[in-house]
Length: 304
Image (cartoon, rainbow, N blue to C red; front, side, top):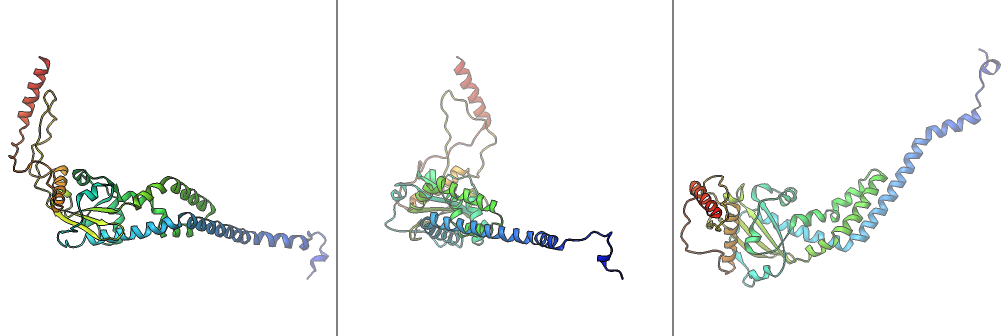
């Protein structure tokens, strides 16, 4: 064997130069990964400290109230426990200001994981307007306060890039500036009104109405209305054409009829006279041809 050093035509390798270069090339990805991980940990820690400092008291109050409200909803979708009224509670108490309000259905909630989706569902709803009350939607409290939940902190801990951390910081500051005041107002409300439909559609069955004291979770009112004992009597204004009739009236109530009937059940439970005329004659069956003829007569009168 001929030693490599004796072969003058072969290029000579300067290991004193290339060894550090090769070491740096091999080690660079590991060094870059380590430095990026340190940067990510530092930014994540800064954001967690910033979140705790900016939301501390608000987050504590929000989570206590939200956990209590979720427990009240879960308890309300179980078997009906019978009517109840706190003797010192009156309709005027609810009418003195806004109340948290939500509507849900029995078949949608089986455990706490189902609750938020059901609360966020937008049902056709007239219960609070029929009671003449102002409501603040519970779904808005849930959505606006999502950044105060432990799950948001878990999201920060699971962020895998500095860019994600920066986006979460921008989101946090935006939510605080935009939603803090409305969250404070919602958390200050005293009463929580909950409507629970027992049927797949509200108009197809009874609806329960609960009123709770938010600060204590104490039930103040529990009423179950059938929703079928109110009739809306149509009337005409002279000179105004009658609305087009899509179909003859059936026995199925409209949302307004159902919900205003349930509202009357609430009034009765609170010792308040029901809305509408009692012992009035039933309206005549709807006749589309008569409505069309009446519209033609009105139109002719208007031309004359």
